[in-house]
Length: 126
View (cartoon, rainbow, N blue to C red):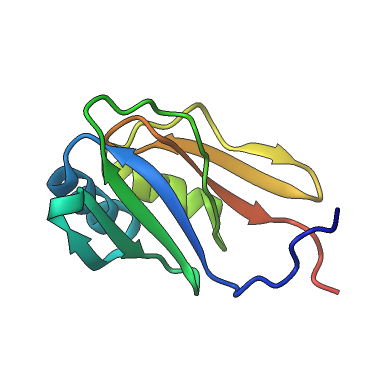
């Protein structure tokens, strides 16, 4: 069996949402994402992110079950990102976790308690 290697380079991360309007507003206001398209009859939308070719798809479900996926977005300054989350009253899971010389991580939650993470690469850019 051989691995799939012919990827297009794009990625959509599907997340459950109890209320599409509320979720769209949260992702726009807190993370600066933009609505790409919305299919109300399917209870689905996709939002662009700051990462080229990576979108977040929101799927309406009756009772979202958070935790099935944890998208991780790289940031240049994790302390500044944490401050922005705090200013938006976003629930954060503890403090920034740093693995010295490697990465800093911060877990936070959207309006439906789906976990998301920020990461800051601490490795030297040689």
